[in-house]
Image (cartoon, rainbow, N blue to C red):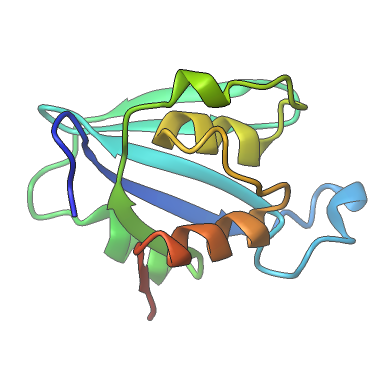
Length: 131
């Protein structure tokens, strides 16, 4: 259920075979990023190893980003952002999971890997979309 001030969001999970040191992570859950719905379009937040990709996606209404990412073989969850609880702010390593959690307002929740984030979001009521 959406809270006041929240926004629709999508979290995308994928493999990253180009980075060997991620091989220990569960296949399909080696990287994550998110899209947050803005007044017009989507904001893409993709925390990469070497930089932070931030893009404005002004997509036509007939293009559904959930369907696009599913079609490209990724695992997709949809839900709502929430206000970030400042009392839960802790120093943690800056990873794709930590950046996505903070963007969604889940910074205090315990999840270190993309798969743990996936499980956390499902427990929080997010919807998993499958091909």
